[in-house]
Image 1 (tube, one colour):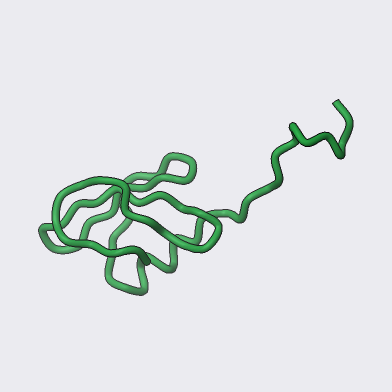
Image 2 (image 1 turned 30 degrees about the horizontal axis):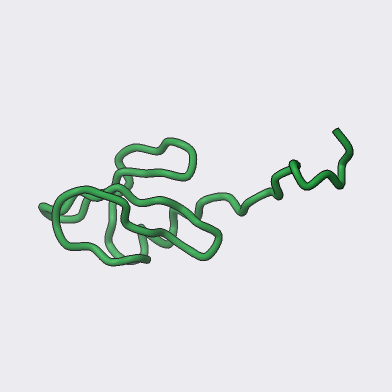
Length: 65
């Protein structure tokens, strides 16, 4: 495969766990771009995308970080 091939995926930025911690989330589990975090009684699955964390599941109230 050529380095400039369209099949080569561009490198994405590493997840920034500190963004979650700053707003009071405790990171419980990490798997690639996903993490399970909790705050109080809320337990939420977040996905890291290039511009931040997005809620993809869980229970409780949480917005994107």
